[in-house]
Image (cartoon, rainbow, N blue to C red; front, side, top):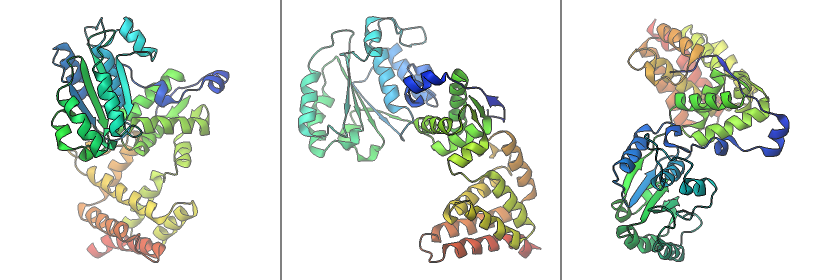
Length: 384
């Protein structure tokens, strides 16, 4: 469900904030499958594998940054060795294995950053370690982050161990660049592709974070943060901390667009109304006002293209679900879509897209954008 303009509450004790501040990306890092956001199909599959005792010896978690790959790997590793699983297949957080994991003193779970440990010697040390059976629980789990950073020789050294590991060893590899991993490694792993987290899921999680710690934040402000995060929950939480530092205990939509250098939706709504009236003069004045606020022409034209796209998806009830905004803004898109015909929107998108493609090569960038603005302003005039 899209968020509306209702406000959420978030606050904290100033002294505690200064002395014991933990960034939200760490403080609210999921610790159970249930709290992982936006990856329900993957968490369900992993839970079923544990429930049915069908654990593979190697897994590959791949997808964009900040979507929960390493987090899921840690939760999976913790749950595999839990001695008192709940009926929902979640770790109990009470047994010896869970307490050791929560205290960062578990000898069953080993994490390796392949970005800084990518040599053959590092992999040989790992393969020597794999032979040692676990002290508590059934399995030793080896989480290798950014596995695509391993050298070719290191991959080759790792192959034999990955193909025939001891019965107690499970490997979980994580990467943002699956295409860089050699096919012989891929063929030995169960591959899980993590999705970019949807905007309404990010905004909903930010709302729950807000509610649990108490500052006022407008629903539309959360939507802007979620859009800026580009599908990465970690980025969204980092932006959220940044906005809290900027705005204090009250976060408004205006604060967010000011701090993140995002163009206000109102400019685009105003421009489209002017385009429909063939008002070239005022369209150019609005563009000049945007430049005066410190935005460059490329930022403007890409935002305008996105706006036309959003208006177009509102033309059809089937595609309106592709609109990733909520509240009053969504209603404004619907109203504007009813005033625009499809020919105008397609023509405007083509002009804006051509301007975007030509922008870097242009010697007079302002004139290029102004020319695109004039062309769009004349689209309905030609039809008349």
